[in-house]
Amino acid sequence: MSARPPGKMRPIHAESLFQSSVPSAQPGSAGLRPSENTAPSSTQRFQPPQIGSVADTGLTLAFLSDLVLKVIYFEGKILGSGLADKVRLPFIGVVNEAIEFLRREHLCEVRGAGGLSESSYEYTITDKGRIRVRELLESSKYVGPAPVSLEAYARSVRQQPLQKVRIHPPAMRQYLSHLVLSEETFSQIGSAVNSARSIFLFGPPGNGKTTIADSIGRMLMSDDMYIPYAFVVDGRVVKVFDDVNHRSVGEPSAGDTGSGSAGNHQRDGRWVKIRRPVVSVGGELTLESLDLVYDENSKYYEAPCQVKANGGMFLIDDFGRQRMAPRDLLNRWIVPLEKRIDYLTLHTGRKIEMPFDVLIVFATNLEPKELVEEAFLRRIRHKIHIGDPSYEQYREIFRRVCQAKGVAYKDQALAYLLREHYIKHKRALRACHPRDLLDEIVDIARFLGVPAQLSKELIDRACEVYFVEL
Image (cartoon, rainbow, N blue to C red; front, top):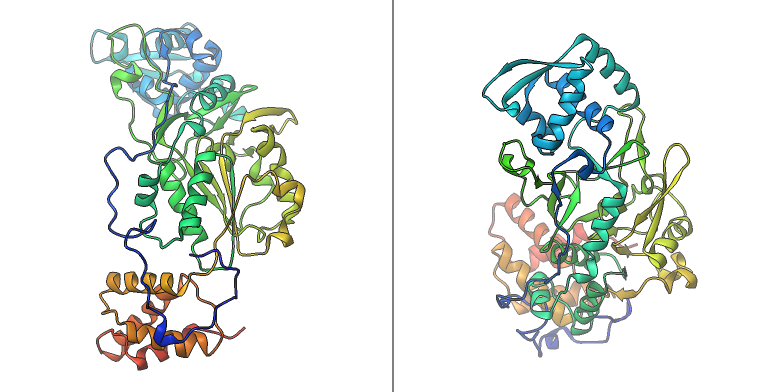
């Protein structure tokens, strides 16, 4: 992909298109093998703390007891070790304290025992406990891993900064090996990723902006970090972890959560180890979705997408096509981009301060001057134009697609395609065209019952149905 302005193509004869081929060692070319030490390196200081008492959790005994009681209610009957696994906290010193409080208040009782230790006792709810649970469900239906405090979550983000991740050229070649990029674009992407700040990808459609952003995401996902399942603020739970946006790389075992009896301190199982997150949104994005989402039915919050992206990448694809004015969306990001802090609003009206450690990527097909004013553009650290491919780059892309689809590549056939369907029509090259045209050729050949090949007939028929004059 070159940085040539869109729509400008130098005069050229089709027969002389391929006098110089793409160098085999170009950035992003196929066949390059990264060395063993090319993975991103980071200094990950944060580790889930050791938990030995209720005070260590940062939560009150009343909050924990209410959560444990709701778990017992929904499970019907459950072992003490099962309770510890559900709330992801040690049984000894934490869960057993909550159970003891509930038993004193006659909210739960022991129904049986599978062993001598308290963790093997089977617990069930009492009639008084059911009344209490109905009251609790009026204010929150959250049941799951116990939340951490907002302060603990903010501290964890600061201790696992995205800037500690370093991507070096050998690793870049690995992650971008499926793309054909110019040296200039390759270097710009590398600098932008290592800045961990913000990137504005712009240029004509079909040249790989989203694919480049996805590749950047895979680079970041080679590193790990910890996030909590949820955090609590003003007694309200905010869910952070979800299976859609986060990829866990290891769950705590029973011993980790303290459901056994060994030791009085256990690792805090409320934290889950994940790949650094990559969250992507498109035209469906609204301003409301960038704030805490309060579910009136469940009575707890879902963290907005930029919070779920903390420590990783947040891609706003098709920027400018959202259901809001671009200026409104841009104004929403001025403070987070400048201060690395975001402000979210509870449904009570209270504002809370959140860390904003996100590589935010804007990708758009529209002209920047139509979307961005100077005050905002200067806050975006890296502006990268993803332009149309050169003839040599187009040839390399076409050759790779032919190889992937099992179609024999011929220079003469590509020269015919370029002469008849690009140069004569003054049509701009796009990096997506080889893939789309080869798909058309394969489909037509399958319908006709003939081998898929780069014949003039199949090329003409594919172009006829693919290209539309605008």
